[in-house]
Length: 537
View 1 (cartoon, rainbow, N blue to C red):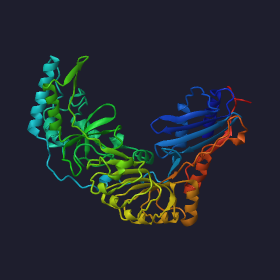
View 2: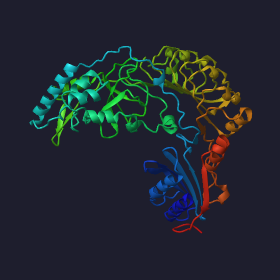
View 3: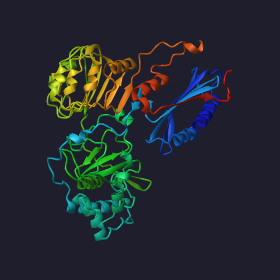
View 4: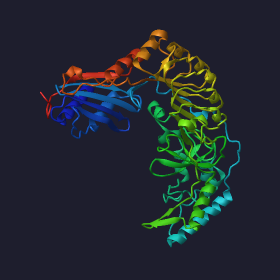
């Protein structure tokens, strides 16, 4: 029973507690892959406790709860008096940046920007099959010369019939290379990435084996809501994954080199990108083709751009220079948006008495704008930008100039003067709002935002919304924001003077029940445990 496992956890936490402790709190989680962890085990008063290994118990709770998704929240409050209270849920969790997140529909995620992008303007491949084969030969000869030995032999190519069956759709240059070798046998010829044989390439590309892109969840999206770009402008589609990205080599650390068969408007079929577990904000552009990647390796070897360590060859492949794509403008510089140029993707405007957004008109890739500590500004020029994420912290905010904005997707408002949300009704791609630090003229208008998937409010705002217009239809995820901090009484005062930061876990549980009704996925367990260790009596 889950109750017994949670009781065992409470006993372990109690046994490891410091002298004169009164309360302990664990914020844990467990995953379907047998993983577990926590973001903190704290004791009141604040003296450090012992090292408590709770992996077995957290995993057991996951097994017994049998969640439909990957992630299970397990929060546990233990009192020195021998009581414990736990919350177990796969839908309710601590939110990035504070407060709580409740996922109503884990399958309903915002469409990624790639959905709205066109294909490449240049549909021809940049690679050259003959040159690629010649470069591979030159590379292997230079490699043998430098290492002073001729002992490496790549795996032979597969039989032609099998190769023709497996290589369907691959770029011409990569397909030509597979006619001579079947990968590199784990040698790591390309940027020290072992190069797959054809059978492994095909297997790795199957949807069920693209594990680095599996389990996309709201918690991940809210941590990195913007997909950025590298390389030539709009060369790569702005997506977390795409079936047209075919991994052909691996770093063995969770990242891959892939050929891109579905490039963005500024790319070319067959270009090489890097993707995987370390690229949550989008893939990295590497080269316009496998041919170009080989060309760089040969050029580096011939120019002496390499080193040998413990008998292994490390090639310093030259990477294309990249200009910074973020810009921060402060103070008087905001009057002219000093430093703004076409390649900027993220702009922050901070602590400015005057902000003039007219220089932003027509910027092709300005996808995120943050404005903080600015009295006010005319937002009309932003209509002529592709901004998707907009965070405005201003004394007054007039949204009417943004009415009908075609690209706006996620909006955060922070202001003490009431804001009219009416203009947002005509923004077709708007899926998310954070109004937790804003005064709003009429929260009832939120029920008219038919494409709204995510909404973050304070508790009082949620209650006002429910009273005015009920529960918004279609919400997939909801946020309960932190309240302003209250001064807490000292730990040694009477028990009832303890005030946790609001929203407390109990507040969040009640909010989730109000939000989701009978379908709320939150289980609360209370009980007593055998006191031991250093528990005060």
